[in-house]
Length: 124
Image 1 (cartoon, rainbow, N blue to C red):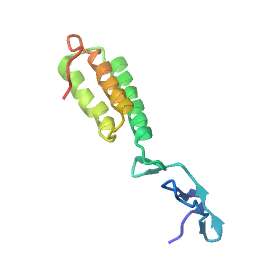
Image 2: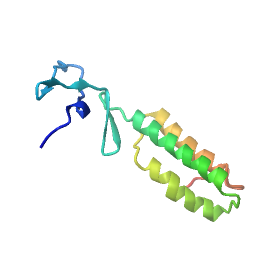
Image 3: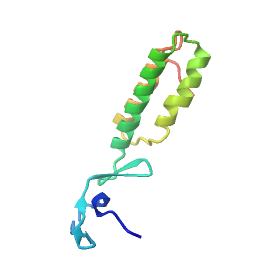
Image 4: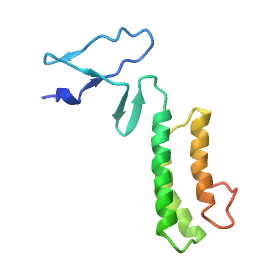
């Protein structure tokens, strides 16, 4: 199997890593800090904050789409749209830092403001 050397990168994990140079077919591989693997961002520090930030950004974009694209704002319809379009993005991130949890909860609070009478309620 042939590998595309231009698309290959090395990520060094750990503080005691020597950060050696690696070669493939005589060409030195580039070094990276972040790599996407199966849709998940992997950082060299193994923190998931970048993954959470990307998921929150996509979820907020979906909220803008829902808010601007639908004039009839029935509670049932908006909840179905939220579950289908927004929660699917948030399901891929597992927050472990307080700032990540606050960001995800901010998306949920923003959605509850779209529906009259749902301000401050919890969405399941």
